[in-house]
Image (cartoon, rainbow over the protein chains, first blue to last red):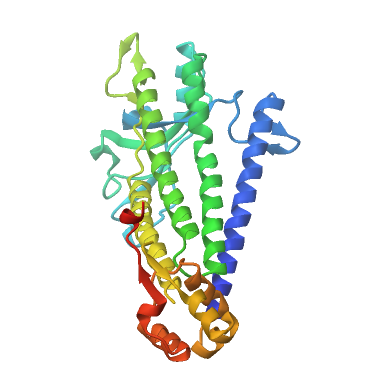
Length: 281
Length: 72
């Protein structure tokens, strides 16, 4: 076998092997922190997922508000080429405070939430902010950190929180085995077929489980609404936030898994032909 | 498999050892063992030709077809 290629496979095997052990360690630490700590803190290390904080639920955030709702601060113009044509404004912190206040007023607690690409956006043309009276963020995908007292849903959100890490450990293990088998013997073998097949199946199972969990969470979770109320009357032009559970289906990962599973059939056939060739005297 | 390899019998007749045959034919003793034990999936014409030449025999002397259904 070509020495360089063998070296590349050895390198990849080492990388995936390290990946496996690091992910396994992180998984074990996370489980240990869930069981043995009260707030997920292990010395100076904070573990992301913990029952005291809640777990990430995939959500779609829909925001509608009028300009007058917020205090805008003019930010530096990011794209100088467009200077004079467009102005960039950064949303002030009043938004986050407003969310918290409204949550408290309704007897809830907003622990934390994340949105994609929320802080920076383009508004107005030729600095004419008045032209934009109403602005909406359509279907922002994000995660809401939430918890529940229902054990059935709690099991699902815990599973959802750790699913990625569990499958990453398993995929790294399969890839490590795959590169090891290529390093030792660059040919079609049953071992390579099995590792490719398992990796493909793992990806497919991961995508389907995440999809099913998100469907169940979407069915049993309620939408979260934030409404602006002025003098006891809903102010429809001020602020309207709708946070609804999101159905997650990673189509790219699904296609990769499906392709690997399909390619594994070729590996199986290749292993059969290889063994026939080896047993031809 | 209904094809039986009679290499052992011919080797015994010729008073030749497996290692010697393997060396003369140009195959490894491991491959000759696979052939003798019936584990081989196929045999190349070039190998068969070399074996027949060394053992001075016909392919039919080495390979024999046995109908398994009739023998049962």
